[in-house]
Amino acid sequence: MTELIRCYIGLGSNLDDPRAQVERALRELAHLPETEQVAHSSLYRSDPVGPPGQPDYINAVVCLDTYLEAHALLDELQALERLHQRVRLERWGPRTLDLDLLLYGTQTIDSERLQVPHPYLGEREFVLWPLAEIAPGLKLPDGRLLDNMLEQCPMGTLERMPV
Image 1 (cartoon, rainbow, N blue to C red):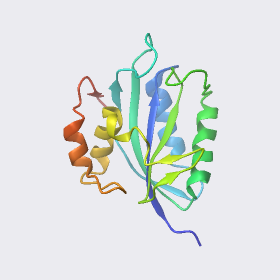
Image 2 (cartoon, rainbow, N blue to C red; image 1 turned 60 degrees about the vertical axis):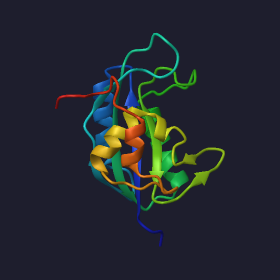
Image 3 (cartoon, one colour; image 1 turned 120 degrees about the vertical axis):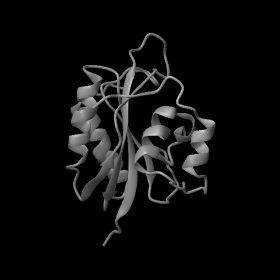
Image 4 (cartoon, helix red, strand yellow; image 1 turned 135 degrees about the horizontal axis):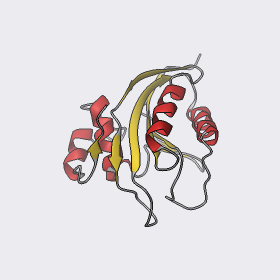
């Protein structure tokens, strides 16, 4: 039997009613096979990263406990993106839904399809601050502490959304 793994997923949307896209995805993530949703952060508004002229993003982070292997979980996340009509036209371009596997237990994964911890985790306030909300004191697989990473990545223009 496969072991239960705690993982964290970053969510983002800036097209087709982004708040509704993220809220719907949070509900859908709670129903993934062999997976239980433990917690999710508040929603946050963030400035877009990537090509200019994009609308602002709505972001969140969810904590899941899963028996799914990392690549199987990635397949499930990409299937949800497709349900939301995610189209990959340009790197960091606008999207209806982006689901990133940020952390998968204490594992480090570097395959053609998947890098965990997520390679930009430490640089993105719209990931770090929601992650800290649901996992204070978290230690990454490489030994870095989330609290120390927050000190290097201020909130800037990131805004926690009212409920």
